[in-house]
Amino acid sequence: MTLANPDVALPDFLKAVCLAVRKAIPNADRVSLWQFDEGNESITCLALLNTEGFSQPSNLVYQRSDYPDYFDAILEKLSILALDARNHPDTSCFAEGYFEEESVHSMMDYVFDNAFSPFGIICCESTGQCALWGDEEVNELKRIARIVSIFSNIRHLSN
Image (cartoon, rainbow, N blue to C red):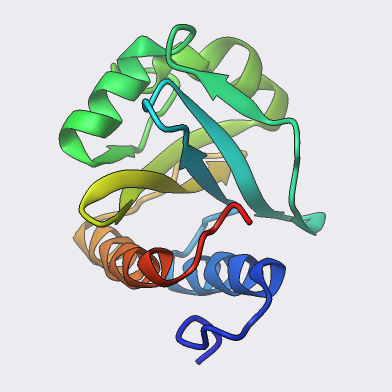
């Protein structure tokens, strides 16, 4: 219900999305929402839910120039399922540094849109071990991304 209420404050909406994803995706130890810049040259973290709780990091930005394989794949395919993210061709660019620092082993990302243009990414990560996500989890993430897409057309997520 929170996701469908346009009067809900943005932080509450973002938290509700993260909580819905965590509930729908077993072993999603980290759930984050990202927004593309206007030219799809960077993504900025809007929200993060992990074992430490919910936050809205203001300085977590990834540039396409640093991670071209990931950006090319996510924008072309609109989703990535990397059960072994450290060795997956679309996500191995994060292996040194980010994945090591956060102990990420699996990653499942899905693009949500605004007016049929890529607007952001819902990211699920399994830490400590590889996840066994399959079609059911992918379909759940797609369903949530469609809901977020509908409401990203109603509200400006970055405001």
